[in-house]
Image 1: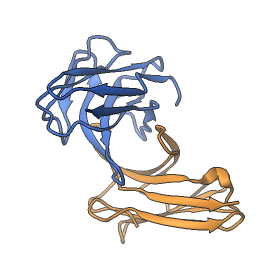
Image 2: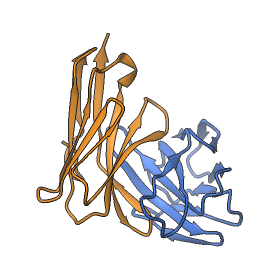
Image 3: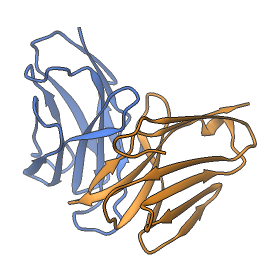
Image 4: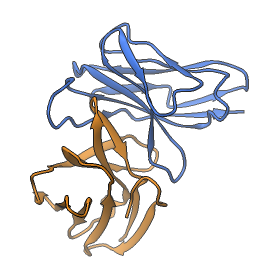
Length: 110
Length: 115
């Protein structure tokens, strides 16, 4: 899982398998966001889940949020080689600032 | 990478030199941000600006400076006072100060190497 003080996690899976990654945070939040970063590129927003939501879907992505445990998970179903990337969670800090985790690196093997 | 451009993509600098990284957006966003990313690390906020002619220090502002004279532009200067400037620099923007559920849009990044 990723949070401010933990080392980034790496996950290697076969194409077609599901990939699950976790994120934890410390303070109360308005929302939690997930971003993807391909190697050497900028981040791309994937999905946002509000603090009053428990689960959200977008295509092959499923995000859960447990505010009692201050944690979130991102599930990518039926992974593809193109899903190979680093995935970051981010929480809002106020003044439109985001606090990013250290990321989960996912490698999908064709 | 949306409507945000960063230039150059790669930048080499000699120690002791100041260098300015460009960030331009055509999304009409109010807020803009500069982040630094080191290998295996998340993003750390350097400076951010919520409106033209105003900006605030982030978590690691020492050795950096910015300006926000135009809504679409937010250049970052890495000064000689920055002790370890070699990193990947990312610029981002978001739609509106105070808006709910702001997502950030990122540029492609500039990789700065100090020789």
